Length: 277
Image (cartoon, rainbow, N blue to C red; front, side, top):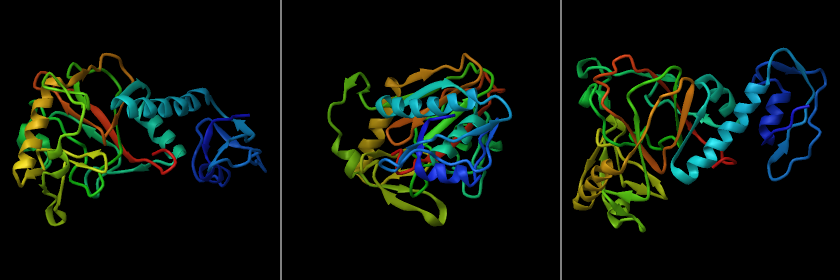
């Protein structure tokens, strides 16, 4: 018997066989024994084991724990692979968000020179050099809630991270007014639009696609530029690590990778389900 707490809708999908549970499959006539409570149930289904499942269901607990920690601190890390994250996120009802229109959900991030980079990307502007702090998917009408980075090996190039708390040595106790009121033009081709850096408690900033349109937006851009000095570094010193970034409240950036041309991360982004958000 297996009993993690998951949304009721996912239990129905499991019983209908609409998503895989690696290493096992439901036995004929399997049913959920639990009663729904606030839209969630304790999954209690008889499974016929066809392989090891402890790693998979350990990942269930891990990803939920990383999400909880990222809500408090802006990010969290732990052992895992991008495939495990994708399977667990499907079980939790998270929706994958391709960062580029028509692109794959999982993207591989490698340092490239400017001339080799995708148009309108940060790499097209900065090449293998250090990138500025930014929100992934800032050019989208609704950026992803969560960005997961994974590294199968190790990398000497850290990922830089910043969340609310301190900017340029100053403690931030209140939200500056210019973040809520400064107007930016978001360059997204035919789908360009105007927005602020903070809307409904959600951060959005990317100097690669967001152009300040007034004095308050220029203050916001300066604010995030000063935040660079307060960013912390996540070092990919252990193989098989995942980094969960709360994309609504934390900015991130790649440090210079000029010395690390073989660096390779995988990225997968999500909108959270209503039950998880």
